[in-house]
Picture 1: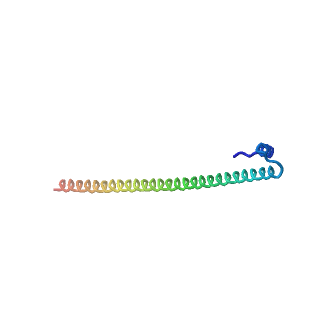
Picture 2 (picture 1 turned 90 degrees about the vertical axis):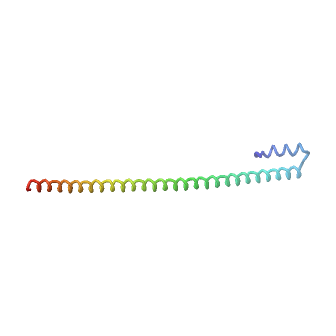
Picture 3 (picture 1 turned 90 degrees about the horizontal axis):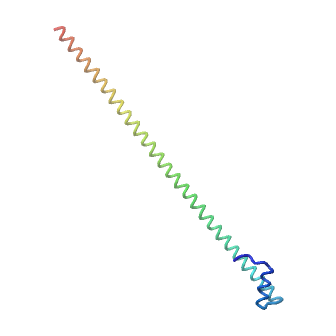
Length: 116
């Protein structure tokens, strides 16, 4: 309901045949109804604003949780990659030790053969 001016309410009441105190009572009643309707609309807007704010906050919280989950996954993947890298370096180190041992043993055998 749109706000109706005092003049419009008087004209509407007059067209209904109201005069004097009856017309004033009609105008007051209409103004009260319009005020109540505006108040109801304001409350409805506030409720909708509250609902939208709750939804916005919920979405922010969900995004934060998802970001934290992704960060945790990324950190876990990084740690796995580091562990794999450490394992590969350890394998290489052991291989070099074995190779050096083998070379040392081979050289020792060659010396023994030369001495014999």
